Image (cartoon, rainbow, N blue to C red; front, side, top):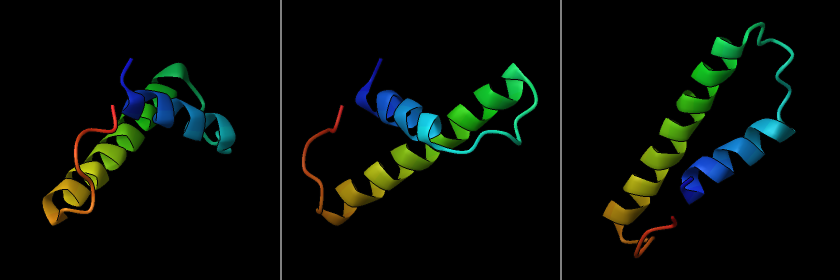
Length: 55
């Protein structure tokens, strides 16, 4: 499991997930959040604010 995936799991554990009815909704939310985290990581790398990889 990558660091981004662990951060996503921790974030979701602290979030209010009562609006998610099924396991597939939870999985969709996991990947949406993971994609957001990875896109922020990518934009930080491009701007030079983040060097290396957080994973």
